[in-house]
Image 1 (spheres, rainbow, N blue to C red):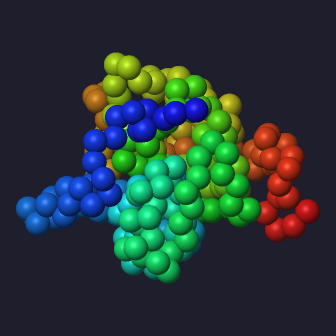
Image 2: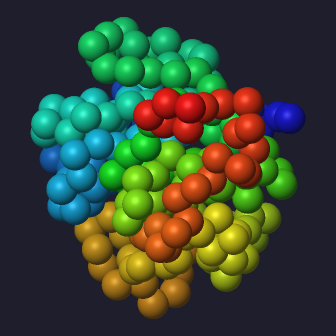
Length: 209
């Protein structure tokens, strides 16, 4: 299934990185997402839709064990060139199986609005599958007319065992009071970690069979 990213992508990995380099050169902080995640002191993070590795590399620089996953082979190649010591996977977020769980999964950079249409529920379920008990999923994306409304997104998250914990308007933790962008943190509900029965019958659960 093709993703919206595949149809809307307008830049190469080099061009994408150059945009953030220009932002940093202008005096702006290009690491707002990493600062947000680091504030919750996770030991391990899955960067879901990692692109060229901007967030994952910064989190690793801050001492957080981070793994990156993205479906764009060109972006993953760029991430590997920039940080060969980190773990990168070119895979679909709806089906990737890493065989482990994380304290936090972050999907920054509008990942959720670039998914293949209709795959949102599967992606949320797989993100939950990769979370430790009490872990958090953090998403940040634009609210577009042709995209999913927040209440529907919250419902799909709840179906995956993820309940909304807090919502902000920016990565700087400005309270959300409506508007065109939302940063949402979801928490794993008690007893919702056993996702292996979902679509992973062919994979052993993390830690063995």
